Length: 117
Image 1: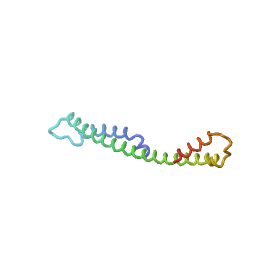
Image 2 (image 1 turned 90 degrees about the vertical axis):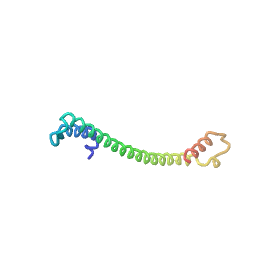
Image 3 (image 1 turned 30 degrees about the vertical axis):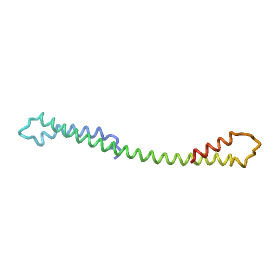
Image 4 (image 1 turned 135 degrees about the vertical axis):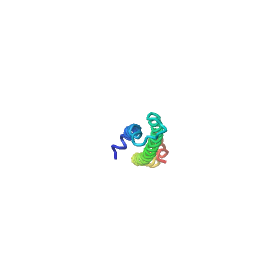
């Protein structure tokens, strides 16, 4: 199945070309000549081919969107876990020694809270 999905465009193109040249020998109307029949069947096959390609690409696009949503959720969860680890390492700012005068810890702690929210 993976082979078919991987090479769907080539398979459809080969099948279309084969049908264009085989169909006149199977059913040839008396009112049309050979090249007119090949041209009409080519147009019909091209329309069907285009519709099938559109359907396949639409399905692939929808699957890709779902996978991206799942990956975003996983990455957000991992980011929040890492931010929690960092914030636990710093601990609440109020419990730290207030004589430090380090505003960097406060800024980092506030940034972590904003990002993880």
